[in-house]
Length: 148
Image 1 (spheres, rainbow, N blue to C red):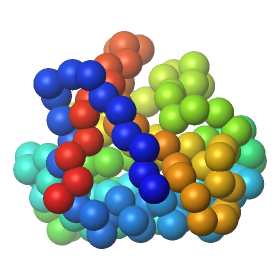
Image 2: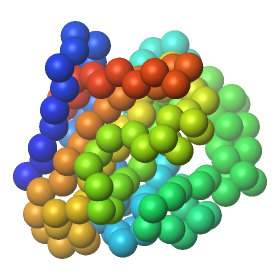
Image 3: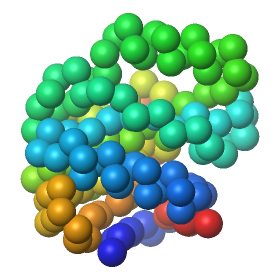
């Protein structure tokens, strides 16, 4: 079961396949936070290519992309004419809402920040909470998620 919420007219449209991959990654890495990127063609706002990353912090309460892995990914996206459409990570013990640290580190103003909470099910079968946000200049705006 996937629980989603959102109250605004802004929307993230994402395929069931990408959602399933993000959720599976979050469950697989539990109890540590999982993190990754979903790339898409520049300017399209279409998340297509799922890129799971390693949480270099290996933490239950914090995620950090490995700087060399991230540099490689951005170079690859540049060569492919892509940009990060979704930046996702999981929360293992709290709701799927950006923490103050998440907000402070948000540096992609056009990206959708997807959070997946595995607090109810951990790595087992069971419900997760998936929510999407835009984070610009420290301001968090939740958006609806449409799964196609």
